[in-house]
Structures are given as C-alpha cells and as structure tokens.
Length: 83
Image 1 (cartoon, rainbow, N blue to C red):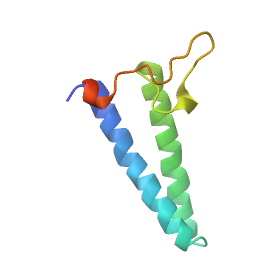
Image 2 (cartoon, rainbow, N blue to C red):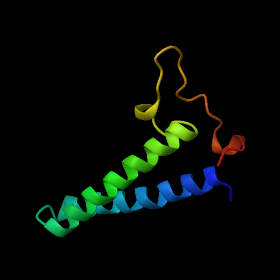
Image 3 (tube, rainbow, N blue to C red):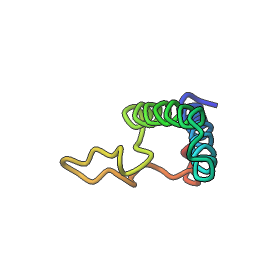
Image 4 (tube, helix red, strand yellow):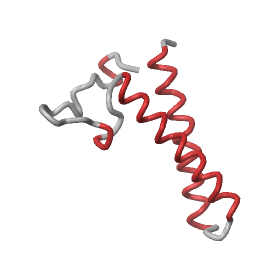
C-alpha cells in the first residue's frame, strides 16, 4: 500500500468511528464522554482530510479549492485506479 492509499484507508477508519459515534449520540445525547470522543475524532478526521486534500485530491467538495478552475471531481475515481 502506498502512502496515498494508506492515508485514504486511515481516513476511512476514523470516519467510521465518527459515523458510529454520531449514531450513538442520536440515541444517547446526554452522554458527555461520547460527545468528547466525537469531538476528538471529528477534529482528527477534519485534519486528516485537509492534509489529504492538500497533498493529493479533495475528498469532498468542501476541501476543493476552485478559485480559478473547477477541480472538484477531476481526480481519478477508485475504479479508475486511484486508492
């Protein structure tokens, strides 16, 4: 696995944690410890996606920098040999 694939994989792992914590907090909104975990991992995920976007390609349109040209969606898709 090259560095780009490893970074993308790691983002997927952290994103899974954030999604699971989101679902848990939907049913346990008063769990302060879970909220702390959510905030911690959401911050990590945001930093990881920003780092990936700067180094490779934006993962979401939010990370796309399209000041002079439209770049979002121009990166190769996984079935085209990326990640």
